[in-house]
Image (cartoon, rainbow, N blue to C red; front, top):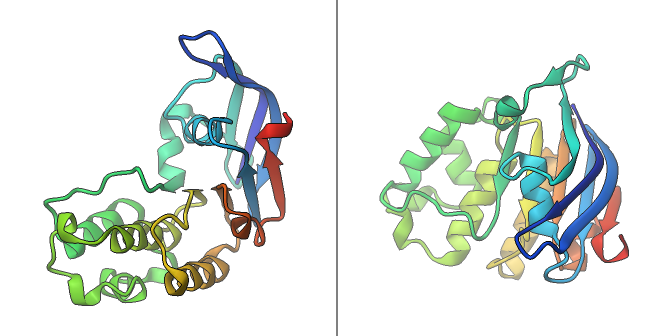
Length: 206
């Protein structure tokens, strides 16, 4: 899998460019970091890569493992995205969300929904509505679903948000074990997130 970004720029109604003339090429088997201060455009860039926003200029391409161009409206089939601001379906249980996600994306190594909940340390909360979970549990569920998904592209925005020291170690181990043969993109302000990265793009330097 490859993602090609060619001269993309993005501006909003203020007519000020938040991103300008970015170029990079991401390939499977690598972990890529995106750093920068608040307001530098990290989340905007992730949204452009995921196809939930459209660049003002330039273009982004997905190429599958056979080098075929993937149509924009099918990008979602190849990626999973975890972010602390992303909402879960609050009136579904942990089990229901895990089964639903598994049906839509599948899980790596043919993991079952029960195994995924166990890996996320949430098997004891399987019948709990997600609205009743703590912020740390919600983040752990989002990360587990994303990293354990069958997706070729993983997008992680501020993945350590709401994680304590123990669960940060859990996240590190999980990502190390499941990063192979995928494109992993991490946007963060935390330098610890970039220790695993093969390349890091600093938006403050663009």
